[in-house]
Amino acid sequence: MISCNLSNPTPDLRDELATSEDPIFALCGENNRNKEVEDIVDNPNFVFESDPNYTSVFLFDAEGNAVIVNSWEECRHYVVGNWIYKEKSSDMILYLYFVIILVFVVFIYKKLNFK
Image (cartoon, rainbow, N blue to C red):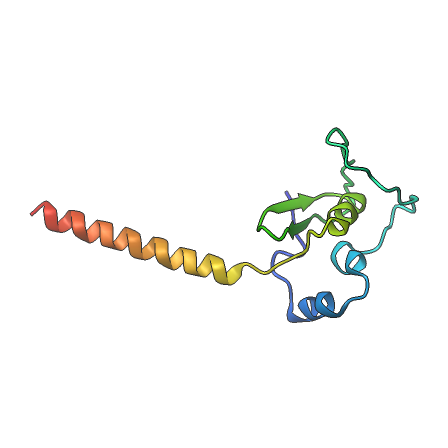
C-alpha cells in the first residue's frame, strides 16, 4: 500500500515549504541511503530503484500533473525539475459540488419526463 506523506500536509509543513531554503529536504526528507548523489541526465530509459524504507511522496508540476515517487533519489530528481507540492483540495471540492449538482439535475429531469 502506498502512503503519501504530503497528501494532507499540516499548516506547519506548508509554512516550511514556503520558507525553506532547501526544498529537496523539505519535500523529500533526508538522504538515508548514504549514496553519493548523481546527476541524472534526461534519459527516458532511466529507471529509479524503489526504496522499501522510503515513504512515498506525491508531487505536482506547474501544469497539475501528479507523480508518486518511491525513493529519495527519484524525489530529488523531480524536485530539481520543479515538481513541487501544491494543495489541490479546493479544486477537488468545487469539482465534487459540480458533479453532485449535475447528478441531481439529471435525476430530477428524468423523473419529470417519465411521468
